[in-house]
Structures are given as C-alpha cells and as structure tokens.
Image 1 (cartoon, rainbow over the protein chains, first blue to last red):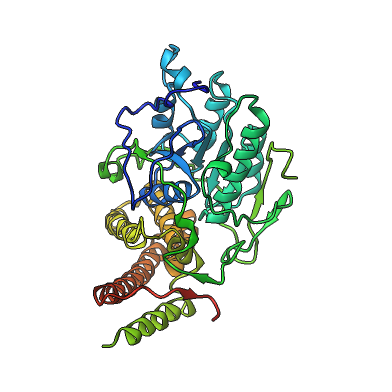
Image 2: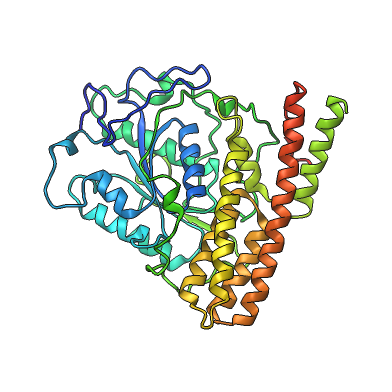
Length: 266
Length: 154
C-alpha cells in the first residue's frame, strides 16, 4: 500500500475533488481514513456515507458484497499490481443483503492475504446474539445495531485513528493534529454498551442544522454502486435468510458488543 | 405570516410528530448530519425513502394479491421497508413492519393483508407530515430565516 507519498489510488479513477461550501480538500490523502461501505439499501447507504464523511472519512459506497469484492480486487484469483495501491482502512457492511450476506463478505475478506488485517464492522437491524457472536468469532471488529448513529461512527473513527497511531511506525500524521474535527467524542465505552433503542447514546441538548459538525474538510466521495437502477430488486428470490431469528422485543435493550483491537479503549 | 411565527409553528409541528410517535430520535440524528455544506440532506434522504417505499408497497400489494402468496418474496420487502423507515426515524412505519414480519413468518395471508393496510396507513401519514414539515422549512428559508434548532426539552 502506498504509505509514503502519492495519492492513494482508489479503484475508481474518477476521483472528484469537489470544493464543497468553501472547504478545501486536505493536502494529503495519506492521513485520510478510507472506508468501504457496503449496503444494499440506498437510504442506508446515503446515511452511512454521510455519517462517515462528517467524521472525516473518505467513502466508497457499494450496494453488494460482490461489488465490494470487485472493488477490492478479490473477485478473481489473479493478484493485481494495483492492489498495492488500494488503501482501505475500514470496511463497514450490512449483514442482511441478498446474494452475499455481510457475514459471507467478512469471511472472504478475512481469507484474503491483502485485506485480512482491515477491520470489518458489521451493521444489522436485528439484535441477535448468535449472529453477533458469529461475526465477532469470524474476526469482525465491531457490530453496530441499526439505525447507526453519529456517536457510533465517531467511536469507530476514533478507535481507527488510535490503531493507525499504534501500528504505524512512519511519520503518519494523526487527522486530529492536522484537521479540525469535532472532538466531542463520547467517553470510552465499556466492553458491553447498552443503549436503549430509541434514544441516543450522547444526546445533544439542541440540534441545529448549523452544528459544529460541519468543520471537517469534506473528502470526495466515490459512489461505486450503479445508479438507482440497482433499486429495482430483481434479487428478491435470492437468499435473504428467512431466519427464525426475530426482531427484538420492545423491552430488550440492544447490546452493542465490541471487540476493539485498540488497547486504548478498554 | 411573520418569520418568528413561522419558526414557532415549525418547532411546534415537529415536536408534535415526536410526541405522537410518528418520528423518533433517528430523525434527529439525520438533522445532525445537515449543515451548510449539505443543507438539504434530510429532505434528500427522506425523498429517497419515499421513492423506495412507494416501490416496495407496490410490490407488496402485487405479491399479496397472488393466488399463492410467496412469502419468500414478501418478507424481504417488509424487511427492507422496516430498515429504511427505521433509518429515517419513521417509527410507526417501522413498528408496523415488525408486526407484518411476524405474520409473514406464520404465513398468515389474511393477517398480512391487514398488516399491509396498516403499514400503508402509517406510511401515508408520515409522508404527509414530513411533506408539510419541509414546506414549512422552505417557507422560512424563502423568507430569509433560519430553521430553528430542535430543542429536546419536551
């Protein structure tokens, strides 16, 4: 992977540098966290992409496990020289997707030599402990209950930055040093974070459209998925596991299990 | 109408949607993601939700009208609608989908028909309310005003 200079070569060559609202693009791509987001739901893709961008991540959003593998160059056996340049710091994927589930995608990533060290986070609307355990056992970094909140993504982001600091011997600057980021992060969570379904874990007292979250320079976004035609689901008869798992009863609190590799967190 | 009055109306209206349970805190999460660089984020996402949902509800109606209902087709649609409604904070739609899915599991066609009606009802309700909300916002912006911050004190 290109660590010491040059633009991180993302698979899509149409990297657009768009000046948004007067914000300048960051001078170096190196310090940017690049996230690959995978979700078959367009609404969820837009939301997760925004959540990630507002926390200073570059995002590539795709609509299926297959496209994710394609993006990573894992869809065929031959190793590509381009892969050396592909910089992915986090993969965040929905669990329930037609065709290839997030769990299956997780396994494939962990089986690959190029990407097994990349943290994979699973998102699911269903709070099923067996599912969570299975994903964590397979090497998932974290399991987020949908709908994903800003606090969840901020937490992820901060742990990523810490991992980068710890694992990188070279002079990679921390994003916090160079870029004004909203630093009102929630306190380090305990290993099992219980948060009730309908409230935020870090409730602000006022919400305004012009909140302080707007400061971070916004990075370009590459939407890898095909346009709205992907909405036309001809994949209905594909396997969405018709599982015996049921949605949580209202009185159950979702449990966000964490298995964060970063020592600083626990 | 005076700007201050419009802003108060908007606040009261939004508040009522939360009190009625039509919207939940996830909608506030979306509002947090809106700023000067993305001033229309919420309405954009909600519009996508409407388009998505219209399609899903249509597919659901067709699927349930079949002679032999294929629940393997019905359930994923409801799951999808549950997910997207949850993501934008359309609480009552989401809850109606949860009930719907349990009847899908039981393969109870009649109950599913009722569920579909319920889901549609809740959906049209939230659609109507949100369209009104966005209109109020547009009026404020058109009058040169700012959208007031949503206080969570209620």
